[in-house]
Each structure stands twice: as C-alpha cells, then as structure tokens.
Image 1: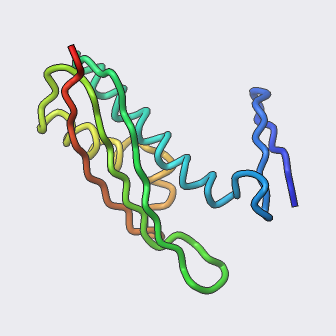
Image 2: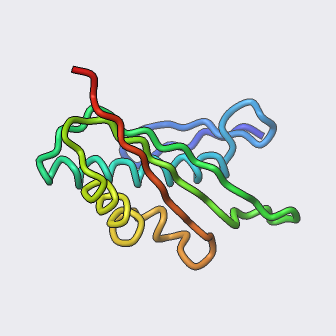
Image 3: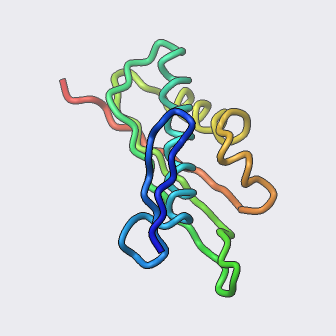
Length: 124
C-alpha cells in the first residue's frame, strides 16, 4: 500500500494507504495550502510588503461514503511581516483563491473552499 511518486523534475514523494506515510488525499489538501500560500507571499512581495512568514492552517470535511471526496476546505492564513494592512492581505488571499491558485481552481465547483486570514506584526 506504499507508493513512491517521482516528478518529472526528479523529486520523490512517498504516499501510503495504510497510515505509514502521507495519504493521497492529505497530499491534495497540503497542495491547496502550499499553492495558495506561495501565491499570497508572491503577491504581497510584488506589492513591496515585508513578509517574514505565512502559515496556512487547513480544515476539511470529507464525504461519509466512498468516494470520500473533500466537500469543504477552509484555509486560514497567518501572515507575519512589517507594515502589512488588512486590505493588502485580503486582496492577496482573494486573488490566490479566485485567480492564481491552480490547485484551488481545479477543485472549484466540486469543493466549497473558504478562506480567512490574520496578521502578525514581525518582531523587531
């Protein structure tokens, strides 16, 4: 029940169906968070904001019966930096979810995806 996936670029990921490694569904969920977090950070940096960190906490609900697909995913971003504004972070999160995150957009129409965020001022 353990499989190793190798990407075209040579990276390897071990996935497992019996709990000995990340499951394929966990991998999809982590991909949502990673893809959208990259977008959020990139958008904020292009806006010349100082970003020290971005953490994405994901909560998901799956169907009770097979195939146990994701029905809902909520992504909460905690963005740390200097001089961040609610407006800039809200815009970055919205742009990621609605325009740039290919993983979220691939799930659109099949999974209810919601987002939220909080700001933390970087320690000086």
